[in-house]
Image 1 (cartoon, rainbow, N blue to C red):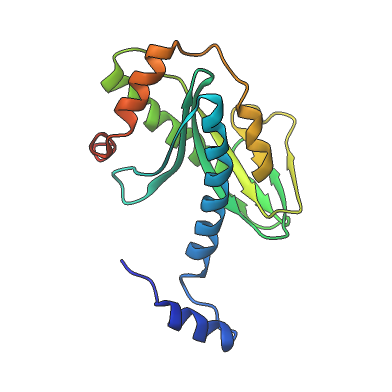
Image 2: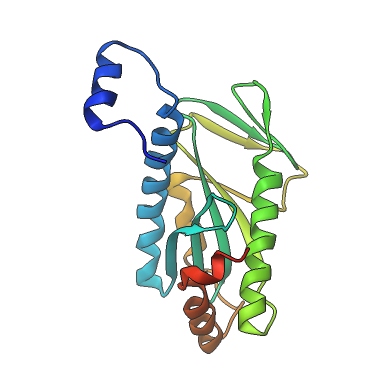
Length: 185
């Protein structure tokens, strides 16, 4: 499915009309910015993959693989918003709840299943939600099953170690980088 051309998007902006594609483009901006932050972790020995197909028509925003573990990173962009994240839901500007935490945990479980199938050893995968362009992020005191960061805070993952040996990291990365394994999820 293709979106409107650059000219059509510009024309909509000039007329101050939103399109069905605006949330898609906003999300893409967030994904790219988080991707750039994750790319900085390569210098610390991490492998980063972006936009992996999940076999259900969507994609896995980012996968971070290194000695410190495997992290399934989801980007969420809400410019200027205040975000609250609970055990299962997130609220943006005290509005309706979004199942961000539940979806992140489910996606991490699917990633774990794929990697373990092809690696032949346990590969725990931690879900991560990264919020971009937000005014603030608060998390419930009980919310510890999903890592929550703002865009510039993902560097906190860099110093993590001890989850995998170097040969395991190499094997996980070799499996994860082949798009065909993700089409069967």
